[in-house]
Amino acid sequence: MPGRLDGKVAVITGGASGMGEATAQLFVREGARVVIGDLQKEKGEAVVASIGPACRFVAADVSASEDVAGLVNAAVQAFGRLDIMYNNAGIGGGEGSIIECSEATFDRIIAVDLKAVWLGMKHALPHLIAAGGGSIITTASVSGLMGMPGQGAYGSAKGGVIQLTRVCAIEFAGHGVRANCICPGGTLTPILFANPNLPAPVDPEEVRRRLAHVQPIPRAGLPEDIAHAALWLASDESSFVTGQAIVVDGGWQASARQQWTPPEPPVTPPESLE
Image 1 (spheres, rainbow, N blue to C red):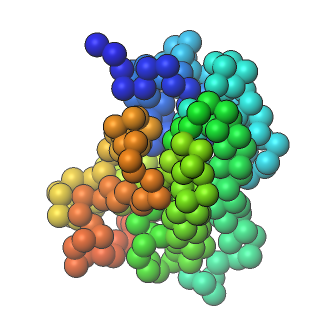
Image 2 (image 1 turned 135 degrees about the vertical axis):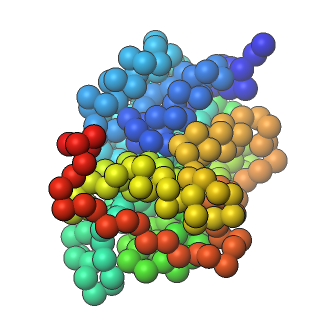
């Protein structure tokens, strides 16, 4: 049975863990050839080893234009074309209030969560157009749709991603390029339990338990939930969908319970995370 992405080539940023890793695994199972980019070299190489020859790793800082260009070019050189650009890499957490957030922290979050998306689009678009069209997907967040305390930089970046996605969709629809973003809610990824911006690691099982009570669907979101949304947006099944912010949050944004405070990190990190 043919895969939903047979013959397609994808670039996935932030592919060494979390949503990016889950998406790389799923895309390859559905017939795509994938290049993942990440700063986490050992983890990225381990992901590639687990997937096989249809996946390659390129070390890349997505906030650096030359790195993003190199990542896209590596995919074209390795596999002959580019059909899917998934701007997934992101950082956040621990920034504090508008008063507390440092200028350096604000600048870095905007650079990785917003400027890097613009760079991904900028460098991928010529190749997508040359291939006759394609799909640009970006990981945004419900934080870009809701006012969430302590997420001034992160929420602003993700809100910017949603608007940038709309502009890209309108500018390049005539070239056969679609642009959409995914807005995850409370999803169990390292950004919530092993974020370097947090004072100490948080027990992922405690995060899982708390996330189960955030939204109407009583479980934590999983990286695979986002991967399946990305698969649909990457495939021809969504050929009439562009300029959209697809919310994947278990009903969180639609409910009255729209605030969640992550658990306080323990004084001593649990053994499983040391």
